[in-house]
Length: 453
Image (cartoon, rainbow, N blue to C red; front, side):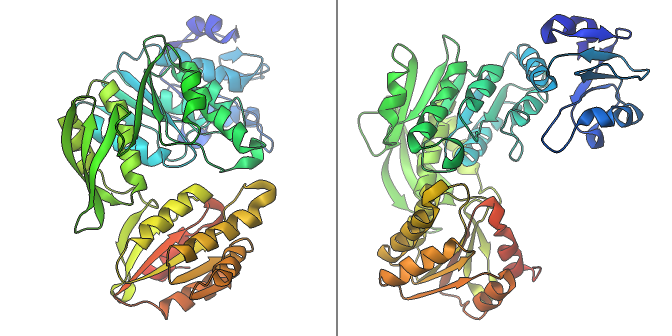
């Protein structure tokens, strides 16, 4: 993959020891392959320089360090190993001749990524971000996975503060960049919603002169992003509108509860039948469709890929529930916008509807009011039952009751919640489970389906 000597100018490094070729890059001693270059990162609670000897025993043939270590191991000595990791990834990305798409947004970015990967998979070998490898460490590690056989890459980009997306998008140099939306999610690192809007807009900083920006025209902040893209190639998407390049027309609910629609791209139109629940997933599909079109896919290829896409675990995934109920696993994460979208989807379901809500994290000073707003929205949409797990979700329960909701209860113990739910389940009930990662609502799903708590 790399020669150490050739990496010296790339990393602004000093080579201690003999030159040799390395086959891969690793930051984890548990995942080292033979011939790997080990990058010794530092964090608040760890220093991987302490594990370089172990990395050597596991098969690493060289290391990137910020000070020379007394080991019989070639070392590239740099000022900052985290920055060196990014430069390595940027160097490797420069060898990739396929199409790379970057995706960000407060909500839906993982679904958009997976939809896009489904579309591209029909045309060639595709690399997509795994799990939540979407930060300043995860994006470089994803870029290292690029192989000569890949024709497409879809890279998810997240942030916990300003400047982070700017950094990773410049490493990835996307050919197409998608901004799905900006919402009041994880405000603590950004100070305000305006800070989130600016941070998400950083994704376009990595686009080359011939790159294409994909913007959600339905987002209230679209004009902010479009203003920074004057003179650039832009594709706008939005639901049922005539002033954008990509839209959905004739939306209708199918027998399986998912939406079908006519996908209109510029001057063409093709029918799409989604296999995932929720109107918000139509918007996600439009984002993926616009990016795929920018990457050269035909409308028919796009429709085929969207039709093949199935729900990602933990994201609006329908499951067969106990007692014949309809169980929807949306437990992977939550913010106010995504919870409202989930409630809107739930409100469209037949029979009785129940929302099981875990706390939404990182909302800053107005966390309690944000949760209360969710309770009011659920009551306004006619949801019959709301069950909260956690201190903040109790605010949603109180607001739901105050707004005239029929049945709500707050829990602070997961096992008690699960046992209560088991007594309510029946074959005309749809139960939606949602919460932030820290709420671990997947354990509620497991408790209902497998009995494990």
